[in-house]
Structures are given as structure tokens and as C-alpha cells.
Length: 456
Image 1: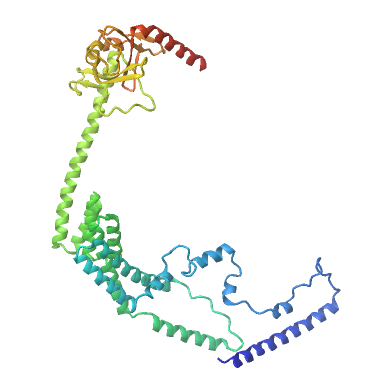
Image 2: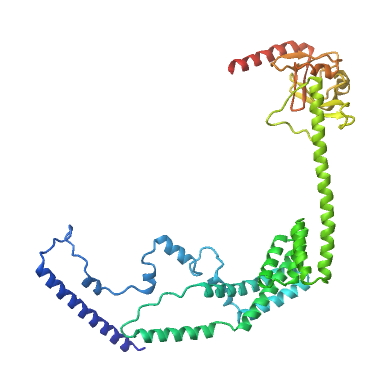
């Protein structure tokens, strides 16, 4: 269309708008003559009438689309466009721009990526092969999304016919344009079938790469995508079963293998996986049975220990944060399953005068403190030689917060029985002090306990 034609068309529209505005102004004058005049707005401005509205040009299509949207909605819509994106977002528009970098149809480009991936896979370059398969998947998956959207989206509202174009002619033009576009853009049924077959193969091949790279979750996700396209894909079932088996999900692996064998009962690869699943299931069953037996045995031994403590009248208490003692524990020895065995206690020797300590892993109830002090002394940090078997006094804290003196030759059971002292978190605590400092420490200990009780 030439500039002269455009200017003539604009002139015709302006004449039409001027004639309409004159007719409306004449009608308004007649109405104003019959009714009293209304006061103008407070600020003296003129009122907005249909006549003045006709003088303004219509909004452009782009401006009309955003007229009733907020600024945030407009910005969000702009950011979905590849030209205004601040972060890369995978959508049909970005995939379309990526496809512009390749010549040929989507099927040709995806097939080329598939061949390149196959070459890398043969060379055992799993990561490179995965990247090529991914590029092919992105191209064909975008085509699948477009087809789904075209099949599910409603037909957009048509623009009202203009004065130059009658409604019937407008409909005929739109129909012919849409049909022409569909014929040009839509692939044939055979091309769609080939695209889906290629996409299925790309998913299965990428699943194989994930399996080699030990990306097991990605492997069964790609296999699932292939099965959505073709529920009879044996390779997808095989690789899913392999991935599930690798992470110990026996039931899922068995299900995938069984579905594959239902389609091809003579498939040697699936038969091999089936045998491995059976072996793994047996091993898992044996392991679970042993674990259950271990838990039951520990529960039974804990019951026996509690019964032994009650029989000996030994008080115990557990705090909210018991200490970590690795394999040291309150137990019956020599046979933990025999109630006639002796109790054995983890024991801490505390040296409060020097802020040091020693740990005895197993203190039998029949043994005396002197038997253990005999190999603990001399202490490596006691340079003055104050800690000797004859030169120390030993104490235990009572339930009421006091102290009881512990004879060094008295069996541990005699010191614990009777309920005067308690075993906290299954650990016996014994204070060891040089005789010269024992009395002063005992008085200080009593004063601290008294102050704690007074503070409460």
C-alpha cells in the first residue's frame, strides 16, 4: 500500500468521526435546551463526553492488551519474552529461538543430535552423549507441547469487523488465512509419528547414559517418559529395573522387570535382571531378619538388666542428654542373656582438685575400687606423686545431694545397693582426692549444694 492510499484512508476516517461528533453535539444541545444547566466540576474543568472521546484515536493493539493490567503484571509478562528475560526460562518461545540456530525441520535436527549422541555413546563418552540426546529431546518435546496446546486451547476472540470489511468477508478472510497457516505449519501425521518415535528413542538412550553415570533417578524418569510415548518399550523397562535395583528399591525393580517380561518373555537381558532381583531380594530378606533378631535380642537384654538392677536395689536415673560412650554400656557379663550373670558398669574417676578424669569401661559389681586404682596409678600428670592407693580418699554423691565415703576395698555392689546413691545415665561417678585436700573439698562441695538449694 502506497503513502497516498494510506493518507486517503485516514482522511476518510477523520471525516466519518467529525460527522459523528457533529451529530452527537447537536443532540446534546437539544437536551441542554430542555433541561437546566448542571454546574461544572469543582476545579472548573470540562466534563468528559462521548463527543470528546470520539476525538481521541483508538489505542494500539499492544497498548489495549495492557490497559487493565498492573505494572507488575506487565513486567511479569515481558519477562516471559526472550528479549526481556532476566533469567533463562524454558518455554516454547525460548525453544523456538534455539531451533533457529539449526537448519532443517525439528525432526531433522533432533535426528542429527541423536546420531551424534550415538557416536559418543559407542565411544563410552556418556556425559557427551547425554548432552546431545538432551538437545534433541528439547526440540521434539517443544513440538509436542505446541501440539497439546493447540489441541486444548480455545479459539481466541475475533476482532469486530470494520466498516471497510463486511462480517461475512472478514470471516472468509480469517478462515482462509487460518487454513493456509495450518497447511504450512502443521506437519503431516507421518511426520508426527516419526517425531514421537525419535523422541521415545532419545529418552531411552539418555536413560542409558544416566544408568552408566549412576544418575539412577534421572534414568527411571527418562524411561518413564519413553513409556508414556510407547508402553511397549522393552529397553525402558530394562533400564528402569536396573536403576531401581541399583538403589535397593526391590519392589519397583521387580514390577518394571515383570512388565517387560510380560511383553517379551524370552528377553535375555530382562531374565538376567530378574535373577539379580531374586538374589537381591533374598539378601535383603536375610538382612532384615538378622536386624529384627538383633533388635529383639537387645530388647530382651535391656529387660534382663532392669530386672537385675531392681533385684539388687540399685537406683538409676536417665537425663535428657546422656553422654556418648561408643560401645561401653551397662550390661550383664559374661553372658548378657543369662540373668545370673554379674552387672558391669561404665565408671568415671573424677579428680576435682586437678580437673582431670579417667574412664573405666567395665567395672564389675564384684570388684573393688582398689583393683582398678592399682593399674590407674601413678597418674601421668601427677608430678608431685600425691595420688597413691594409700594417699587418696574416694567419695560418691548421694541421692539427696550429699557425699558418702567409699572404701577402696569394698565391692562396688555394696556401695551401690541400698538406694543411697544412684547411677545416672548408666555411669558410676567416683570422686578421688588426695587426703590433704579431701576435707576442704568436701566442705566446699557441701556449701555449693546448699547454695543451689537456697537459690531454688
